[in-house]
Image: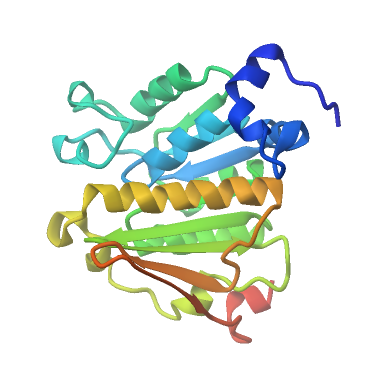
Length: 252
């Protein structure tokens, strides 16, 4: 791998290049990586922002919603002037202003079985920023099918969960090992349950951190664990869950 970087890149990424776990070789890995973010809301916004600032080479964004005034308190890529505009269009513009070196692919469409089956194989890592379990299980299904790494996040009120799955390994458990049946989406419904703005950004930041660690293959990730955060009381814990023999991931 060519160990050289352009002068502007050396300056832009100097504070992470100096880290012994990154260096120039690691930065080149980041710049060659492709990450697909599904859902550009409370989770997807900080993930996209941080990955663009870190220099991820290609970022794909899937969302079909328009910006609503109620989004602004937690969705950090949007301002009041963006209300009524499609999220992916606004996000691409903002991310290009942050880092024009990053290629942004946008998909102004609902994440469903048909388009996820087409899109996921073109990316290295899939990040879940969705607000419903149907989409999360579809991401689990197709990330498993195409042997991708999947970072899942979920938020409600002051609480957040993060999972990391590495489907390049046959030893990896999956989302269905933890949720044997599909939970009700009511627990993720910000409109009825509420969401503290900083909770969304903290969980999204952890997802971005897990993504970059996965790209660089450094540190410990959450494989076979769920990270549970109660940010109201500052209680954090990891819970181990095992791969189930009867699960879809055991037959892949």
